[in-house]
Amino acid sequence: MSESADNSRPAGSEPPEASGHATMAPPARARPMTAAPPELGPAPVKMQTVGVSVYFGDQQVLNSVDLTVREHEVTAVIGPSGSGKSSLLRCLNRMNELMPTVRTEGRVLLDGEDIYSPEVDEALVRRRVGMVFQTPNPFPLTVFDNVAYGPRRHGVRDRAQLEEIVEKSLHSAALWDEIVEGNALYRSALGLSGGQQQRLCIARVLAVEPEVILMDEPASALDPISTYHIEELMLRLRETYTIVLVTRNMFQASRVADTTGVLIGGELIEYGSTQRIFERPLDKRTDDYIRGRIG
Ligand SMILES: Nc1ncnc2c1ncn2[C@@H]1O[C@H](COP(=O)(O)OP(=O)(O)OP(=O)(O)O)[C@@H](O)[C@H]1O
Ligand SMILES: [Mg+2]
Image (tube, rainbow, N blue to C red; front, side):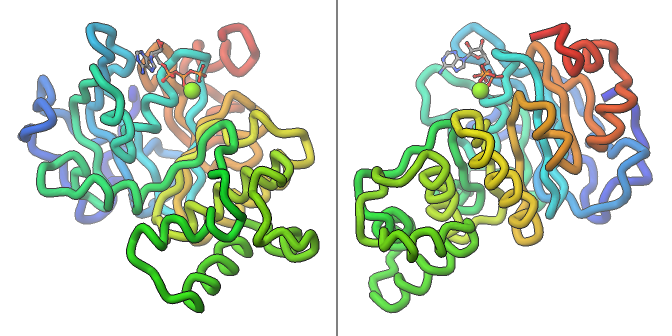
């Protein structure tokens, strides 16, 4: 971040000490917490990466990334293929750790608390910060059992309660009416269209009541109408949740994201209001990328 406006730091979020812990090495130097660019008004910060670097073996794929995710916003991360977008997203719910040889440095704060600190329960982090993947990946189960899967794992056994959760989650994912119309609740989820499967995957995440939803190119495998449904859904979900969206679709980022970060070569080269990033990028590489000259 080249610009800083300390006055926009949210109340109560003081710069973190450069103290490490068991699973995370301390940052090389004390860093000020990323301040919001001047064009962004005040908003509560839901998540924040502070000097996050990620390595796969010897290969560094993220370099000291400071990303701020504001509550009840859609934050887009854009950038060329291989720039580290998915790796950054996976830092936000500790999913990188599921891969061998990965090493993460820096801090990832959720409501100001470092999700990598040893006392934090990984499973709880992934419940609070859910993830939707590029390719819809429903389980080979009924629609009902897909949505009920998470709540059951978390101990919900009461049938009426499960029914209520499933209906509410499918409603929130804008899929309930289609499921009822198609009489599909107790049929295999694999029989749904790709767009319906992706909304089912969103319903599955919503069923465990997350606070943040990470979406990694959630519409890139879908046709234009299904893409439109997913984009509309993101705008609606933002009222209740906080969304981080990785996309290579510039139109999608400009349509749904409040705030956008540009990741190139593992570095967050720009971060600001989506409109400003698209209309007046500060970094020439952003301009080149948006105009299709990179990646
Ligand atoms: N599991 C892994 N093991 C080793 N290297 C990896 C792994 N996952 C990603 N990488 C490397 O990390 C770098 C960043 O990859 P990442 O998938 O985060 O990029 P991306 O911006 O999401 O790309 P795309 O737009 O193609 O999805 C790439 O060089 C990639 O080869
Ligand atoms: Mg990716």
